[in-house]
Image (tube, rainbow, N blue to C red; front, side, top):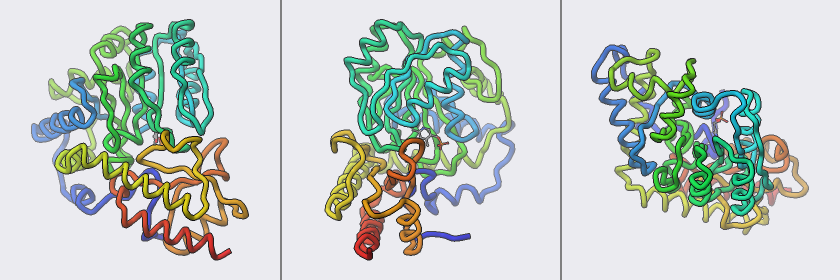
Amino acid sequence: MQTYDIGLVPGPVSVPPELRAVFQINYGSSDLEDEFFSLYQRCENHLGKILATRNRVSIQSGEGMIALWSALKSVLRPGDKVLAVANGVFGYGIGDMAGQIGMEVEVVGFGYDDVPDLQQVREAAQRFRPRLVTAVHCETPSGTLASLEEIGAICREVDALFYVDFVSSGGGVEVRVDDWHIDLGLLGSQKVLSLPPDLAMVTVSERAWSAVEEVGYVGYDALAPWRKKVVDRQLPYTHNWHAIAGLHMATRLILHEGLPVTFKRHADVAAYCRGRLQAIGVELFPVREEICSPTVTAAKVPEGWSWSELDEALRARGVVVGSSYGPLAGTVFRIGHMGSQAKRDLVERGMDILEEVLKSK
Ligand SMILES: *Cc1c(COP(=O)(O)O)cnc(C)c1O
């Protein structure tokens, strides 16, 4: 299989050797051994610190999308009103998902290159009176970072639950679950945490647990068992011990580095990446630099190039970056500098090669 020296895909990101090492150990059966449960509980603890929350965190076996479905299905009943705040592929997509499972969805939509306008969100929330408001912190396909605090306050004003996808920002950017009134906060393992795509995490507030109990959803992705069953040492299935051991290590590394240092590392690398792109004549995709995410940079495929031509030329020189999705496919490409890839020298080498490639034509 072809491998690349400079991996800059915005997820799954490269898994560094110290995290790969935990996958080489033979563990026992996760539903039988005490050691597994204490490891799980330490993971919850670490995640609480990283996400600034005292809420319980469910850690399910499965790719990040499990978190998105799990949280929707566990707190809603068909016909419930959902206000989807959307400014990108995931924001609009979550609205579609809620519609597919029978909810009455209103979308308060914005451009993919922009962030939500709070006045419009407040107006829609006050008029529509949703049970749940959904939003996305970092829109990975378009490289924007929305501010959540005010949307959280709006949710409280209208007594709605607040559902936030911070899959590609959590751990690399400040996220304050409790202060921002996030009832359901979603995270995946393959972004900032730099693990394989095998865990889906949800922070669940007391308000959200009450909704979970009321709704009574059962299924592989149900949230309910993660409240008491892990405490009672009964899992809904045999958990992925390797993945939990990886999570324990990944979160410990972040806390050991120190959150302010981790956040600054991401912000600095992102600023460097944007500066280099602009210096070589590549236009950023988001309308304003202030709304660019510290974890991923989205830029326009330069004039005179097709995405596939650019992708091929970069791969030929050992660099792999990300394409984009939906309406952005073919016209936007992305540099993923999150977690193990939030490294100045890695991004610098990638940008040097991009510059060479663009000059070669
Ligand atoms: C990566 C990601 C997910 C998980 O989805 P996959 O595309 O299946 O990895 C969910 N939300 C956001 C914002 C993401 O970046």
